[in-house]
Length: 426
Ligand code: FAD
Image (cartoon, rainbow, N blue to C red; front, side):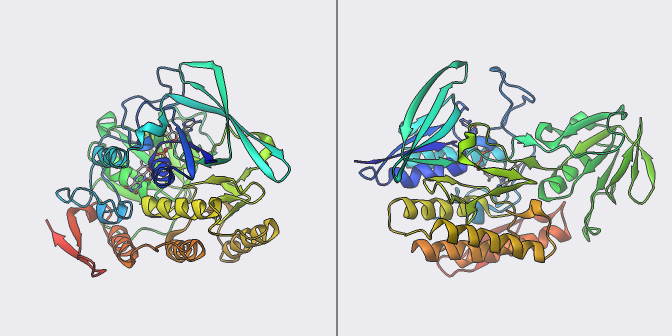
């Protein structure tokens, strides 16, 4: 009998899972659930913020002018390139279109239940077998739930939906506008205003550049070392925030400036409201435990999480994680014992701490991602990512840190199967 698999989410991660599962229909019976009405997850741009027409929180964090921060040449799922006529750094609607083409090409719609909210997932253990009770409803009729039983659950619910609001002294007294990047849509809303953009990770940098096109003045406030980068004339870097007053901000160097808007680019929280407590998943300081290789629940190996990692090349990494999980489910890759898997988690976490990383970096990858991907490929005996993905990703990273406003003005091309890339000036 086929293995029944529930996939929660039809964003890039969930679509990738459904693609690989449905490629083997005699082994897997796949059902994917998504609360949105179409596939694409965070790439579905909407003007809405706050709650949607069903009273559910708006899922997408896309903003109007977003162009990708990775070139399409490395963003693509392996074996499914973006249209070659597109430039390297593409608009959000091109990514959505790509995910829709992917869905169509692999005929994934037949397995996806849209406008369906997964409300509860709980395990029931029978001897050495776990069955998953997945309860869901239509988004508009949330008190009418149905429950189906699955052998495997793949959680692909994304992690850019629940804003992380930092604690800042004086925030409640501040009389200007406070907005999280999750609700940021277009720069015109800040025309002529003095804005502090707090946080300078990749999307904070991008949003700062976008907002500066309309703002009177923009302070990029962050706790990193000063970025050695070219900035628009009306943008200045400042340290983190010490305190807010009614109409001003005091930075950590004790300088005070008057501002109109505080734009929080301070990241997001992991959120799994549908998982039953019996599962024992712990999320503390942005560390999720116990996930072997950041993916497989060590006590319930039939429960996995795709796309938890941060600072990665997302679509190729999802593809790798999905194939790794499938190799575990179909028996082609024997998993270590629960104890060994927990030891492996511990080793990875302690190494990070010993390097001075905070707990909240437990799933941050950056340069670690390539060794990690290769490790999964080796264990699951699957094709590793082409080396050119690493080379081009690292090259773009280097050019971005030097010129956060201008790095998207070039195009790249990958040279056939030569594992090389070329810079094409526009
Ligand atoms: P999502 O796209 O968030 O999909 C999760 C899906 O799960 C959603 O469709 C949601 O409706 C569904 N869901 C959640 N809970 C439930 C539930 N209970 N029941 C049913 N359905 C549920 N990546 C790049 O590669 N390049 C970029 O340039 C880039 N830029 C980005 C810019 C921004 C502003 C953001 C927020 C992200 C960016 N990313 C970028 C990262 C991006 O998040 C990933 O590329 C990828 O799209 C994430 O896919 P996902 O499937 O993990 O999550």
